[in-house]
Image (cartoon, rainbow, N blue to C red; front, side, top):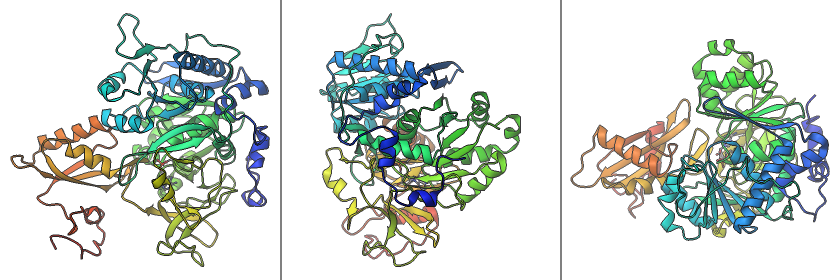
Length: 567
Ligand code: PRX
């Protein structure tokens, strides 16, 4: 029996008040995600239920019940308040997938401050543009990541506190640093949670665009209404589930469903904080008896690559429901998962800006492998003609995905960038920037992005950011960054580079430039291939035509080149 009784029944007369009622939320009242994810679950009688089971890369384990989640996040809130952090101040979480990241997230929300999660593999350049834009007041991090912050500290007068969760008591702390041992801190039983309301800001996630700096997507506490119900109906979270969301909370899946959706539904969730290996993942499922598994196509393709033999070594019979997000889930992957796990991965489509699942396959619904499924009840989605921004008359045509604004977890703006936010709407529709078609039965079939953003292994990389980093290397004169096809990651970053006089392309220079980008930005943004060329294709007005380079990589028609400079 699934939580969503029948998709067709649920879309009739759907109202978000269904979720509000389940959460005992009355419009106009206080709503705080931190409280809903810990205190409320204790009030429902599940204080002693395991909330978080964490396993580190050395096999070490930590467990927290819902009551420990409540008390420890109270401790975080108290500590931050004592430091003088005010409601709506931005507090960045810059950590690996350690318990402090999950608990810190709730603690920051409990005092009404805004959580800014950033991927711990980010280099100093990725860090500074995001901290600068948010004017972040405090950052919570680990000893091993602190040097990246200290490198840029002089450029960040607004950053008052660098909170180290694993400080070495025998070593002096650096400038603006303060030690905070979350497990052993004071944990008040009675903690005054800030009375945030529906529209109070909660999470600030950064996402990449084609041009310009990364955009800070602002969410509010009311997003819970969408996140709770989608987690319940699509991920089918039940009291008895042991849930594993493989995403890192540096990205939206890891917060919307790796924290908020999971804990507000009161499930036990497991976190594995170590690198990918098929054997290790299957062992983890077997050991913890994982029943619900939310992952991503790149991981699934990597598992496919590891082969079917390894699966036979493990007892994976606990798995009852699987879902995927982040990039196109090819039909082969769906069919394979059905064959080897006895369950198909259900594709779900959404993005940082939408805050929760928009289009998806539902438990119990007919699945068409390769299709993203249908809009969540309460979500009106269609595809628009790219020229007129009007919906097509009938099914089958490829157009721009468009969603009617108004669901609870929709972003409220891009932080200090209202202009770009406004550009995301046309004729009363929100445009996520993706292309799709809809078949006669209302299933969406993803076609591709409508911009140059590269989706590598489910992570969006801005060609602009990589090009800017490349230009800082002393040998690089010009650069153009596009995607190239890849079996596992779907696409990876490729850079075309022209060199300054006196430099010659070589394997060593190639590696040096790759490393340079990896350190500045992140391993995800590092080009997997660099091609040294004499001239980049440009328009007569001097704009680099990435389109031509992209077409070459993908073996596609180059199209109209009438504006090409060197034609
Ligand atoms: O292009 C779509 C792709 O990932 C983008 C959103 O990326 P991000 O904001 O980082 O959030 C990822 C996790 C929610 C989308 O605009 N994308 C996401 N899900 C799918 C997808 N592409 C194809 N199929 C999907 N299921």
